[in-house]
Amino acid sequence: MKILVNKCPDTGKLFESDQEFKQFRRRHLAQKKADENKGKADQLIQESMMAFQESCDTFSELEVWITKNTKKIISHSCVDLASDLKFKHLKFYDMQLSDAVNNSHSAPKHGVTNWYRDSNLPRGYPGWHGRLQYTASHTSGNINSSFFRLLRVHTGTGGGHINCSYEVKLFQSDWPGLGITERLMQGV
Image (cartoon, rainbow, N blue to C red; front, side, top):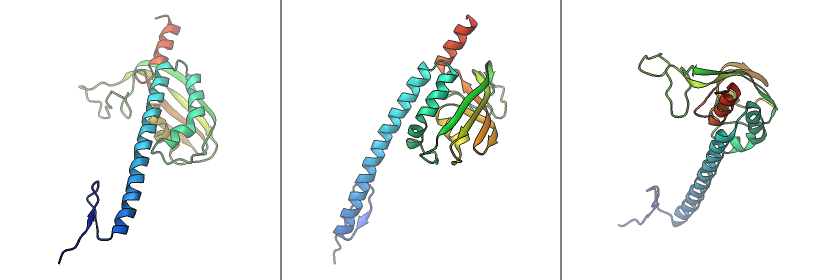
């Protein structure tokens, strides 16, 4: 006795019923297309962010950009936040330029962290450290590190519920436009 089955060419899954196979293929292909479209959208967001990081030359410009693009960033990320989240207030305070911003918990995109203070690894990178304060429209998931990490803005100690304040670090290699402005201001 022979049993004929349908085999999905993408997953290898077997189906005895033609109807089940067709339903599965429709759902599978629709999901595959949605994933491809999301991947393209994510790539566009990343390219847009990289272009902004090159051109952003002040912290106030960064504050405005984050506030205006919150919904777009949430929709194209894996961060579990409500899509209607808004910042009522977002401000970088006391941002100090340093040749060696601590890299124990975070590092620039092409850098390494050094939790154990290994003498064979960098113990810091050029960048800024200070405070980030914001007021959110409502409490929504883990906005502190997850959301800002996507932007290469590294939050540290701090907290809050809706009114929040965190230690923050930005590395110069991730934000080259800010570095140019800082050097011009110092006359370097």
